[in-house]
Image 1 (cartoon, rainbow, N blue to C red):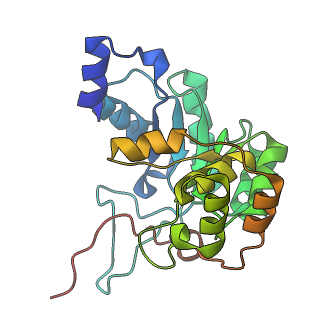
Image 2 (image 1 turned 135 degrees about the vertical axis):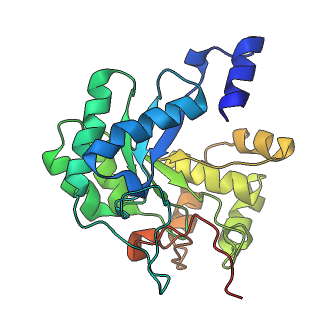
Length: 252
């Protein structure tokens, strides 16, 4: 990623100010003394002088060290009970004070974690990045973010490739047909219209263009989507503490 960024900057396609670059603090670096070195390592890898946003990847701290996915002999994740989320957040605030990090935030948190930080934070989270889509609307968390002046950034906004398939939902498809858009465009419009930011990616140029070509949904469509009964979380980290982001080899 650092090479790609430097390439487009050298070619003059964009300026640094045109880019909004976010990176994350991984779980084995939650202890305050490890936060700044981890942040600086990310900047070196990205070949940047500053980051626009730095997020705590999850509220669950792993055993500190070089192993990003520490496990015991039974394969269970090794957590670190020697640090609190509040202590980690204090170290994140100091990064903002030093000027090399424009904003800080949280990821994969529930309402309890957000309220815990907001009660004691000197700098409130600028962003809370969580899974959110019509099958997991997160209305209570969205309202808490709105009240705190925090952006809720929704990942998995189009659902996931596994079941249940959000883009195949009958209500979503009916709304899409009614407004002349695709199911993906409807999900993106729904997220924007209710006040969240949307995080979605694609390797397809057509899909990228499609994601920008969204229009406001009529209120009747918003009500139909609100009435969807399915509730499903694709990423269980908030409930289990196990990110599952690192692929693990199947046991032989």
